[in-house]
Image (cartoon, rainbow, N blue to C red; front, side, top):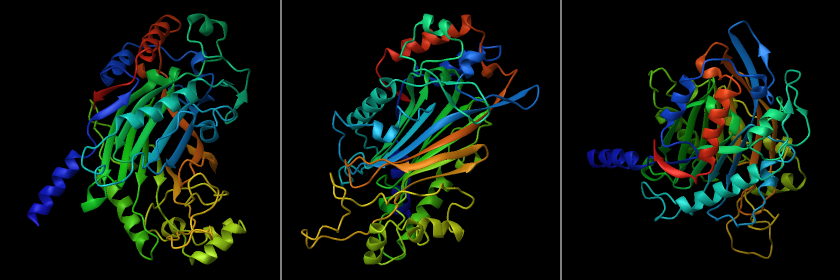
Length: 443
């Protein structure tokens, strides 16, 4: 037992190296230092895309729009001309924060699941495609208006000059930067934030948990990211749970989820008062290939999928059943599923695996909603839950739009800065960061 225990501890420590890719300076302390120099409240121009609510003299709340997406890409490198718009919806449904999780960004073979394995080239390519999709599209800011409503205004071209800020006090160009990007074997999460929100992002932290081979390797497991936006702590868990379509395999997935909740730990922060566990955060979103299947024979599942009988199928969905019985994710929420199962397709095809009569002798895998997005916490509301139609892999990507209620202290130094002088200084500082390429830093 001792050799196995020691090996497990060593392998776990080697997982999830400290290599991160961000668009920030070489230390998060720089951001904290900038925030400490701020003293006044945020001007109206900084909250043009948020709906402001006054609770009392000291506290305010506003809504930010968050896009969360998950995609198992089956170990396939993205082509240079991959259309990200089908998934991200930047033209029709712009968000303030984009959280994108991937599974199997590299093939899960023996050479790739060794501890500490990271393929920075493939993640850099994904980030390049995301950057182009978010920043090269014509973005649509919104006016401050009624609570919970987003009023579209004329598009604003990408322009970071001070003139563009001065001409319109209630609009902001939506230029996005990567605040953190982390890979553990095939699991990859990357988070992008609108440029004018960067000064209010604090205490980013990453935690990796391997649940794969020997119960610790990273072919299965999670990469979780925590940060605070003003006074609200947000946590995003990107995971790939145990596979298998046999009866009883759902228990392995439950065990993986329990392990991730138990073993995930974030830094306490400089004042040692920050949430450390996933469920300690104000708002949490869990995304990924959760691998839950459908409690029906394959033939009946395929028949009901062909008839688009989603409601009947969902009554036999493993995740919903396990959740209702309290075996996993107690108290978590999921939006209504009104789209076809996301797994498993022939690559570059709209045909589910095993449904092609010409291909004999292949292992049949019934369609299932393996790719899911669930959430927990107050002030987080899901507005949309759907899937993309890219045929790159044997999975279809899923996406969810949320409105997140963010709390701000009016007199807090982290709340904002005087305008325009101090903000011009901050803006110029962030412009300098954007001119650099993404680089690695120590967590």
